Length: 230
View 1 (spheres, rainbow, N blue to C red):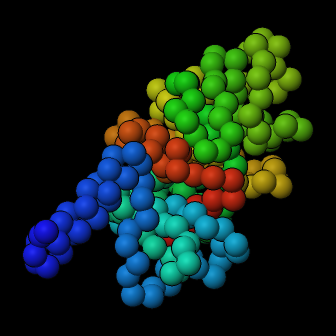
View 2: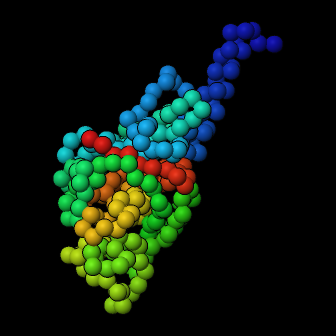
């Protein structure tokens, strides 16, 4: 029978092995730490999952993954300080079409989509192709929504100058829709996503490494939110 010191070392090894195995399968909540209330804690209602984006200067930011547990809000292992790209002109508290800025605030994460097959997203996933669009035509009744139509038959202006985006692009290998301007007020902006990065600034979205995004998508569940601040 092992001595007490050996038993203690064995128990520590088993706990470490369990945590490492869980990390390989995806995000795990970090061990409870001292009570800490992140800046968004009083602004996300009953949400238990939050992606917190903090600007670090210019078009750079970091993304932290948080989960509410019985012990309070905890950072999720593997999801701390993820490098992110935001709008070319930084962040704005007053988003509008063409601003090239990422909107500050608290938003829902509504559903996921991508040109690649569903990686096991915890949110509803739509695989997109050449006939999938994000309607940016401010005169259209479907402004700021995903639409499916052949370009020649779309009932809205499909040109980029109108703000419409074709979703069949490499940056949308995987993406999660941010619920910005859900009232669809013309001119108040649309097509805000968390999507795969190409290494450059965005037109207002949040972009991160695709592999990290896939891991996050598998972890997310309905009711998750994103919190964005400088």
